[in-house]
Image 1 (cartoon, each protein chain N blue to C red):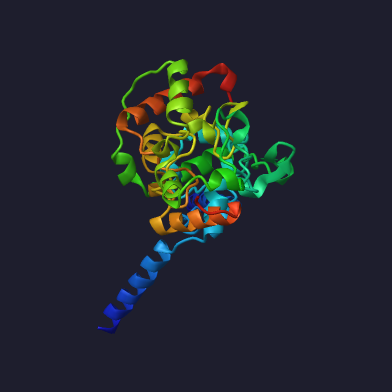
Image 2 (cartoon, rainbow over the protein chains, first blue to last red):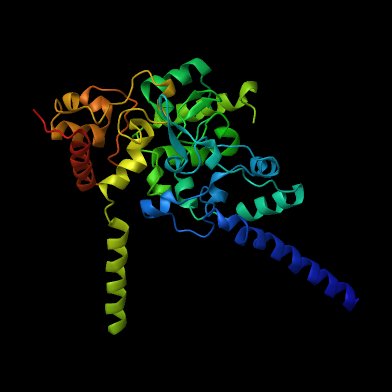
Length: 226
Length: 116
């Protein structure tokens, strides 16, 4: 009996170490997993991946489990675009040779890492302020607002071959991100990341809701599957 | 008492650190280069699908047609505030007024020009 308990205890502590260990070890080499957010541009230029210390406020867990097993590029020009551009015939272009792929995890590791990440919720206060109404917008109307009236396309792709390249692609955004996080980040990127490359465009509440509905529409497009 | 003083000093040091202003060249690199390009010529990595091309900051002729106040307003409040493109966003929540003034001077250095 004693032996069984000992074995169970050892097994348990091993599992805990493995989960915490992966985050502390390989993940923390490229991600800020402890906070606080980056306070200077010099530090922002050095970032290799997005901050994860508020991952539980940001990501959809089912997306994390799936993406970590089969990662694909979300930021076409890397975490800080300035470190991944070169001069081309028509101006600046992405220097793909400087970009590296995210490591793929096994299903078991992806599941346990996601469970750890989802516990990290230092910004529950910001999330609690947001109320995302359910609603729909046609792709055409959403795209018009996104590109012509709000100018978001300057930095973001809305399909694999259309839009700006310095920010993260948005055609899978609603699959990746929690709706309240999207609302809060659009409302004030600086509340999450003081040195975010994303400007606060002072969107009205109506437009914030509209953009979330548009991103949800985009994520359902088969052509944008990721 | 000494503890209180220490805490006060710590607080002062911390608040200075969080409000430290960035060098104009770094702000330009972080926020402007994505559209205006690493050379400032308006050929940034984002421009491929844009309906309006970003301003060439090295173009003395067009840049001398804008006052420092107009450039300040465009950076702080965005393109539409000076009847230009929505693709130029407002940076007022990102940059302090002092940093924006520094950026205006940085633009004057890039165009090697003054207003008028």
